[in-house]
Length: 301
Image 1 (cartoon, rainbow, N blue to C red):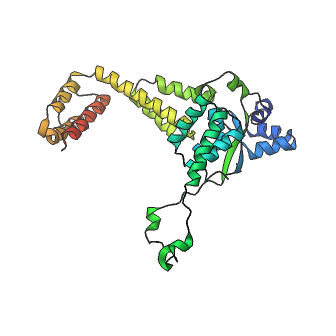
Image 2 (image 1 turned 135 degrees about the horizontal axis):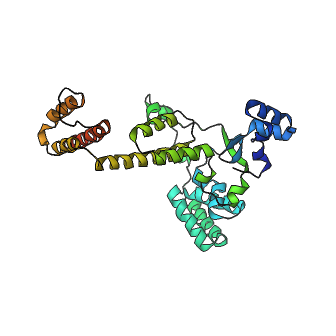
Image 3 (image 1 turned 45 degrees about the vertical axis):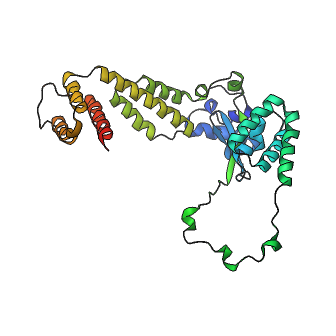
């Protein structure tokens, strides 16, 4: 994919050859600032991200000003005012979604005083804790039960987070989809999983991808497409079952209380201990056993 920002071009070494030497020659030609960016930052999905101390780790994601600013389309100062007011209101993520819709419909200028008034009135009715009115706190009030560690485990935030300093302006200008912004190799992978037409090849592809270091988004999309392909292949197989396989499926449907006996017989047929004419193929046994286990689950009290 073509990129247009100077930061992201620092991670493209194609003009310097191949492999490690290409990177080495490119780094040698960089000025000091570019080399710092290359060494300290990462290139992720068409963007260059730089690390920073995660000072926002204790702030809920839905109350962060930069998130509110992006969703509403206001300036950062306005978003910070809204974030403060919603924090006082103790807004949940669902409440913030509703608040954002309200701001978009009424406008930012009218919405800010509205939420400030709500937050102010709520703060006025807050009851402050009078230490003297409650008397002295017992010595054992701070004792921690032995099993407290099981009941509550504090989540330790990551020390560093990342922010974007360079991105692919061309992809944004063209309004490319998430898939269109992925690498050529990943898009080829999606093409394979969507086009595979037999279970053996699908499972072999799944094993290879499982060993890859895909990002969470990429893995999620791949396995979703994997499931769709698997369901399509299974549907096609059900339409082309042989006579023996169809007969065994009918026996499973009518087994009622004899499922255990039938299961033992199926096992012997599959392993050749019991001979039948035109025994089911390997892929047909997948469907037969799936139907058997579904019938067992249905019959279980």
